[in-house]
Image: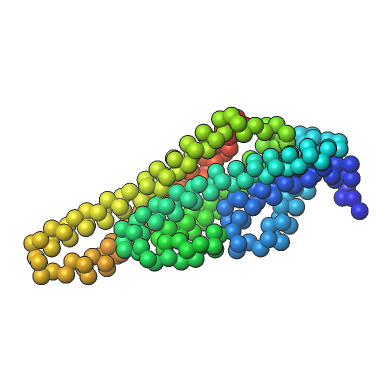
Length: 258
């Protein structure tokens, strides 16, 4: 039985819409992890596609397409949806990278835990800041930004109008480099204080050889690192919130490069 808003002669158009939504849901933060069951993600993607399709129907190719042409469009739609999700995930990668760096400085080099999103062992502080970033993403309604960008993408870049051979890859590489710089900026004050602490402990070991600097450094660096992260948490949250809100401009710039 046909859905009232999806006539049978438009099933290929709906399929192209559904593929882009599935690729986006499968790659965007929060929903892409294994903690979200596949059935839930598939159901959410189908529901969004049903709701969006009547709005973007005029921008999706109509009529019956050849199988090869339909497959090529489906591949393009998948790549485009994954690319949108990847741009947002760069922010999470940046904060996790910064947390990993200060975790090593604090002495947590071997303290790894399981990341439910990637199913990999990640450093403790990196995962902690990653959870903070996910909470900020939800607090600033980052998922709404994705929905707005998704609908806007059909107006600017309808299926069949994508071109990945232009300035897209250089722009994505530029964003990737900027995100690593962002990760270091977020934790730079903590890194500087921890390095100065090690420098001071080195001087103390020279002045007082009987002092067990190694045993003293572990609790000192851990306590100092946690204290500094707590003091600077408001700044970290504010920077992350601004980065997530800037996703709208990055998506629009991405649309211009395609």
